Image 1 (cartoon, rainbow, N blue to C red):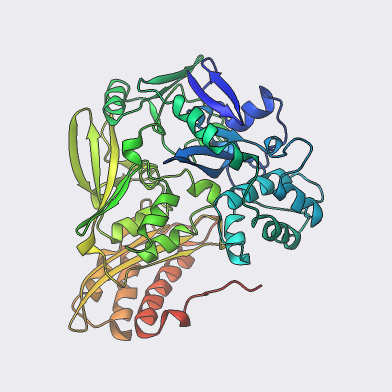
Image 2: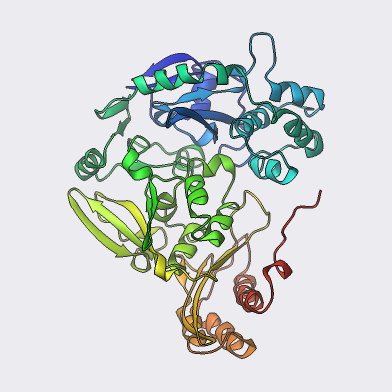
Length: 478
């Protein structure tokens, strides 16, 4: 049984197929058809809803793609849809601004934009154009054009109070009352188990190693919505609070397996700014609010954006199976395409980065066809340490160049012991051609990918020789 609030209405689900997406549940069981299905993959934003959860003594509201969110992920939260925003006969400020600014034509995408705008308003984010563009990166419009939509967001996001502000303390109290310590279960013909502690998770997964672990679900749920498969047994991790923490000490950065990309981005900004900056280009806000770094690694995609950065930083994984813990270098985690070193019943509990391994010049770049909400063609991460003007150690890692994310060890050796200049660059580029023989697919040919990777090395040398402002686009054009 899971319990959550649909706006202020308590919902209890104990006999629903856990493969059901929030979007299908809303449109089918609840007859709430404001949220639309445009892609069933989390790309277009037409299905955007907002999930509220307790953060300290306040509510935090995050946008989410309901098409790739499963009903089990609602446990203990508040679900808001576009139907909930009006206060009686009075439209919510975001809705009113969309109407006033003529920001809707066909209206198919409009509910998604409204919900993203609502989340933006609730986050009290700056209302400059660039920030609004970032927050709307997961919403596509085919007919209206973005100028009036952005204008509507600028007009409405200065409003700080609404009916949700007035009932915030009541909502916090109601959600806290739903918390329970025992393992919850959603079942019909298929089952979903919801452990509350790491110990419960370890025991359940050891007993059921065939189960699929559900973290953010932003990749796993595509198995259901795109491949039309059924997951007979799911273990959902979203109630295991111990796995959600990110801690930074003088010696170590520890990222819990359920820490979202958004949380990582905020906490890592002062410690590894280039890492945090690149997470801005990881999918969209709807994805980053729920996806996790550990899930990105466990999926073992050769084009996952997290793995190259963590490989370059020499990250280690803390793994658990039952009561047994072990630490594994990320270098040894990826075995082959979509295959990892995880044993049956074993799962990631944390990603660990030694701060001494992080170079002040750490850099990472993503090459894709779009700036936002796109998959990498090539991703490069570069972690170089210098001594007396020469490269003392080098860790270069790439995604999109092989069947697994991997380091370019030949290029690393070519740079080590030499100053970073045109001569060492030429040697590293030649070695890179021996490190990788990338395949061709619809995102790019193998020849193109190799040239991209070599050009990223050239960019690295330029960054060390010139100021960052000569290479980076700092502001969007208004």
